[in-house]
Amino acid sequence: MSEFCGNCEKLSDENDMLIEAIEDMCYQFGGWRNGCLHHQFLSALENAFGILGWNPEHPVPEMTCDETGCNKQVSCGGSRSTCSEHHKPSGDTT
Image 1 (cartoon, helix red, strand yellow):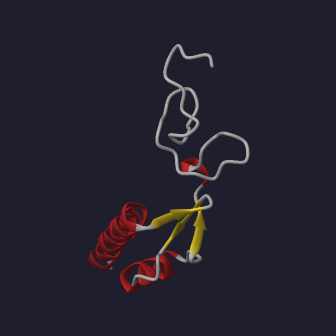
Image 2 (image 1 turned 180 degrees about the horizontal axis):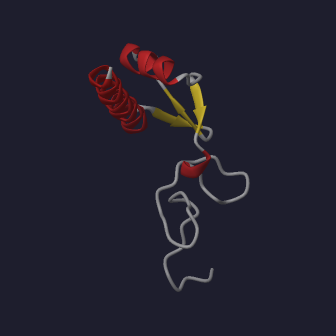
């Protein structure tokens, strides 16, 4: 029985690694629009979104500009996460 349980634990770890890899693929290759990742009608990404249980428009608030009303993807970090349009270089108060 202990051998069976060990195999289940190994499969669970491998499954977690696969899910993480699929999620990484979606973040890297998915399109960005209105604060959401999109599969862009690419069949591999459609399947990946399906495996993850994501809708075709998957909201990702942690990757959205902090500026009120802006849904662009974050491109600049710091004390606030902003898109390139709302980014102000250090020391710039304008």
